[in-house]
Amino acid sequence: MPESRASLVKIYKESTGNEEFIKILHDGVIVYDFGSSTLDATSIDFDNNIQNDESIPLGAHLIEELIFKNFCSLNGCTSDDFNSPEAAVLETRRIKETYYTSISGKCQPLVLELKTGEYPIFPITKENMHKITHVDKVGYSTDTRPFVEGTWAGLCRNFLESTKENSCKCG
Image (tube, rainbow, N blue to C red; front, top):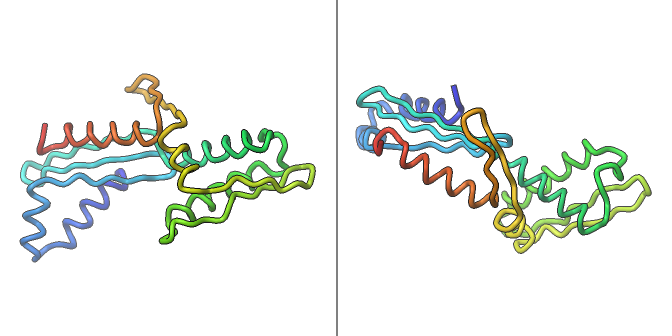
């Protein structure tokens, strides 16, 4: 069961006795789960016991890959230049999470150690993150969808719009 559906069912069960909230759920709800590997959506028509789950591989890992790619481009390096590419990936994820959870919107730069002992940086700024999510291209395909390419934000927006159109109450 997708996490988005499990969350929606859990909320429904926990809302027993709150008739106003239950009415809202019966009017139609879509739950989105922005995960590290996928973006999932679930809509449930509680009146007719119909559910619609959709998922695409548009997770936050793609943002991390773009941060790393921009880091390497700025600093003239490749993944082969790191002692531990795994540690570089984990640090990139940590910095990305810090950026998106920071109330101030400020974040320390991404600093990664190269085999040479150098520590180049990539500034994690609003402008750089906007470029990563709204300008740089990503792509994905699934068993049921051909390869699509676009910006992370654009592909995300398209998925949100299509799941709304395909939801149980709209379809």
